[in-house]
Length: 133
Image 1 (cartoon, one colour):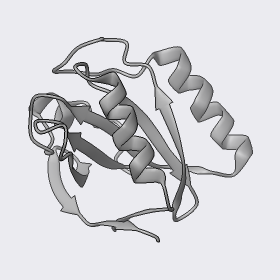
Image 2: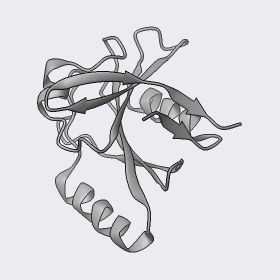
Image 3: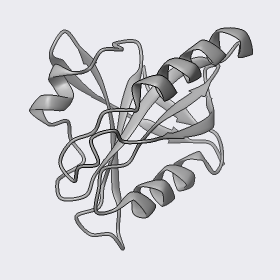
Image 4: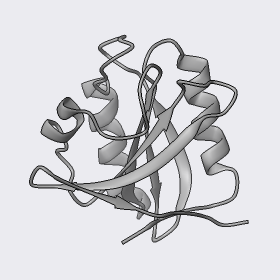
């Protein structure tokens, strides 16, 4: 299963990652089969090497998704200092196996790199990102 993004979503994610730099940015991508909305989240850890979505904010968004008819399609976070691949802690804390994980690397801020993965039972599978134009 690949990750499909509506026009402008990937740009919003990358801009958010740059705004949060040098800390990790994080957020959610929601929609039906196509991610049509990006929801930026606060990083409760305020770290350049780790993230945790603010718990109360995450619970509120997940509760709202139940009534909006949207689904959680992907969890995004940035790696200001590392590659666009899951770290050991990313793999250990992949609590939503139904969601893709979109990672933005800002090692070269002028040339952000993105990659998406499925993380299921500790196993990492790279998937394709399809941006609808």
